[in-house]
Image (tube, rainbow, N blue to C red; front, side, top):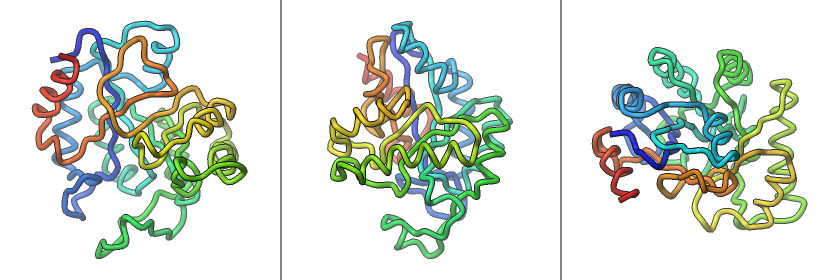
Length: 240
């Protein structure tokens, strides 16, 4: 099943049994099945290792990197233990001003109960356990609309927040909302200037050794993929 010439970066948001499954939410049993499928059918590597291959124009054939966006508490409580059980690396892109807060973003306002965010102690624990922590702006700003000092504060500020909390600089960035119109080219350049090594979307398909790390496609594991097998056939079809 593993791809020969291309690799894939997958994106999750929430892993919880406390909410109905939707495009941002997978149940724990589903997530477990995906992790087992990833382990058995791909060379699962860290995003850092994946990007290092791209920087050297080396093959990412058959490689898969797992990522999460936003910083939901269930990433720590539910997803991380499953990842550890399978021995899988992952990167958590956190919206730094959501962490340790009661913020309820617009897309969660219709939920009966907000699932909550990680605390900084949770994020630090993930980092100590070997998981990668990446930047995702301070307030989940749309970098397709924001420009100038405000965009600079969101990008560089999130990096500085992580330096202050973790004691080291993050090296990977994923822009919020993740569609082609959610990142101005000027802001991509700001991501580069800030010192990040990659900039990930939340759309697209598989990537090859010729992919620009600052135009890194990610495949969201939404309800479009009802089963791991459907995901496998889907990414294979994208390379056909």
